[in-house]
Length: 151
Figure 1 (cartoon, one colour):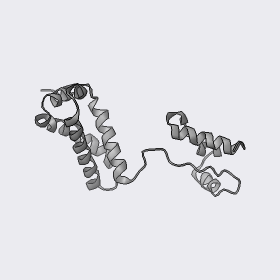
Figure 2 (cartoon, one colour):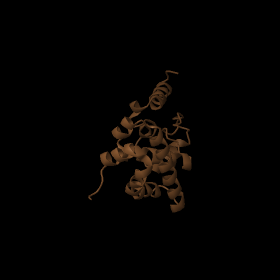
Figure 3 (cartoon, one colour):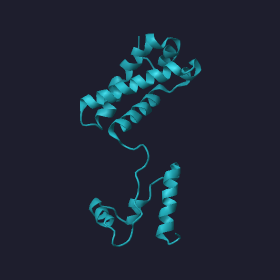
Figure 4 (cartoon, helix red, strand yellow):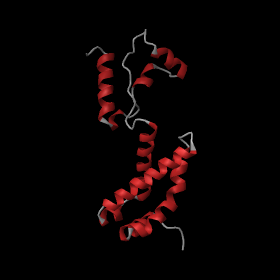
């Protein structure tokens, strides 16, 4: 029997979750472990994150109706769960970082920017794609209002 693809795994999980869950784990354990271990300092912590991700995936699959399991894109779904568990475990924010609006000439941020090699101040303060989330959009609007004296 050749390698099993996501659609086959989804069909098996929809048929009998308990009997086929081990196939899902055996197919994706190493990929998810590698994904997490590159970001964490401890292999034990990486194993814990992946194990917790698989527990969450199992619990979610147990609640899903058959049609939803069949329509799942298994790989990206597992990576998203793993990323969320990683963010929770490490205390990293899933949202963009807060951006200070102090751009005056006396700002201690200017020195940091120069050390980090920014070509200009705007590169540090404006997200590359601010329209992707309302948080970024509002931060950019506040920055422009502050920068151009509209506040």
